Image (cartoon, rainbow, N blue to C red):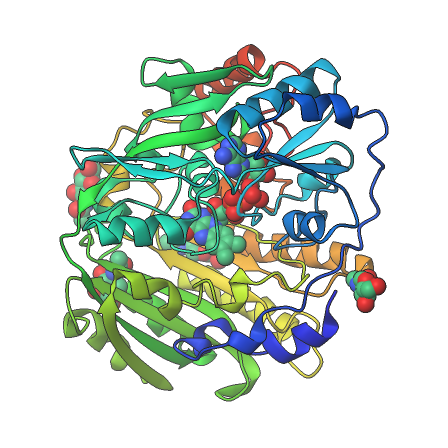
Length: 511
Ligand SMILES: Cc1cc2nc3c(=O)[nH]c(=O)nc-3n(C[C@H](O)[C@H](O)[C@H](O)COP(=O)(O)OP(=O)(O)OC[C@H]3O[C@@H](n4cnc5c(N)ncnc54)[C@H](O)[C@@H]3O)c2cc1C
Ligand SMILES: *[C@@H]1O[C@H](CO)[C@@H](O)[C@H](O)[C@H]1NC(C)=O
Ligand SMILES: *[C@@H]1O[C@H](CO)[C@@H](O)[C@H](O)[C@H]1NC(C)=O
Ligand SMILES: *[C@@H]1O[C@H](CO)[C@@H](O)[C@H](O)[C@H]1NC(C)=O
Ligand SMILES: *[C@@H]1O[C@H](CO)[C@@H](O)[C@H](O)[C@H]1NC(C)=O
């Protein structure tokens, strides 16, 4: 843990960073403090002979090993014994086959932002590092792009932009393209086109036994790869739809409120949502509850981002209801699609994209509306839990993501393994703290308590809808993949057929 780096950098709230450059905030090189099981029993010489000249095998102690095993969250991180850096797609296939033959655990590493606590069960074996599979090839007809399995979101957005194109991708510049997509995948353009994985046309995937297969809608795996994909194989490349850039310009208003305005703020945000989610596809309301001592030294504040596509100023129709509530601060900005990540504090340079060595568990829940009674109850627990002098959780963020959803809901609910198409809001407390075993249980209890309070406002009883990619790790297959027995049966059938030995079961395992 680089306490020095933490103290000087993350103390600044995400959102308030907005356009402030934070070059000085890159963490000093993190050291590898994990206890690792030696690579005993892994015949590295033999494995090396199967790999291409561009592949690398790395051992603990080297700078690259430390860099390529770093995690965004250090709560129960995986601790592989060696790293195989794939140079070409076949390297993945050869490594998986080798591991299958010798019964060695494997785990694909991509943008390294996965947080499931079950990743910690990977305490021996081979990490397969994908980011060198970074090719991006736009098809001649300009309707699709083939993306290497390790391509990062920002690289893809920038490359397509140069060609006058866009794809549905995640919004955070530092995660991989595929990590989010395999669990469904949310992004700013989903209101028009659907989830990230809804755009897929075909993919190359390495199965548990090492076979490299090209699959598309004709494969029985296709349904499962789009929502529960982490469970079935390692995707080494994917071909996905791209679109013309229709509206390059976007605008945002960041409107900050004190906590006593909670009910008024979310009653306003609810207005159109209640109409069965008939809100227009060009508007997104996001909010974070987090500390900003300059605005309120004793409590978190509510930071509302109203984001609109195709305009230079957010339509007052959407912002006036919030202005009327009496915010502490209003900051309008305008630019292009490419500025969104920086505005909402998740650009490559922003704190959430740095590896500070912190623990970052989230406790996600999908909702259909803001229940302000339930939210107030959650606030009343959350605010004192993360505020006040020397609070160990002071960097925490309660996220309320209300993306446009028309394109997601327009597809059949059964069309893919992503189960929660009809839900409208993705909420999650993210409790940020420095690694400290003595706090882990209290944090888990706090996160679960906050989520339960929100759940009580849904009218769903104990049926929790949790986005698998934000999950803490203990929610279970029904909360991640849906409660309908046919879904669970279909997933189990696929798992049995394609990964009977559970090689791909460290992240969101299907029972
Ligand atoms: C700052 C931040 C921003 C985020 N933004 C978004 C967003 O905009 N939209 C969204 O939907 N989610 C978002 N998420 C959640 C995100 O989907 C998950 O954190 C996801 O696991 C990140 O993928 P990764 O490649 O970075 O992580 P990794 O830890 O490298 O991967 C997570 C797991 O995915 C599997 N995996 C990764 N790549 C492959 C592959 N090619 N083939 C097979 N399995 C693979 C592995 O099991 C791995 O353990 C965000 C998370 C954070 C922390
Ligand atoms: C990791 O090791 C470095 C160097 O030995 C040390 O400064 C740091 O405090 C350690 N961090 C943790 C979390 O143990
Ligand atoms: C965001 O809030 C505004 C103002 O209340 C509302 O008109 C709009 O419908 C909301 N948009 C979404 C996507 O919820
Ligand atoms: C919502 O959808 C239901 C079922 O489709 C319909 O009966 C109802 O009138 C809709 N309500 C609104 C406000 O659009
Ligand atoms: C809102 O949440 C409360 C619990 O906090 C619950 O009693 C109430 O029924 C919920 N309201 C609606 C409309 O679901």
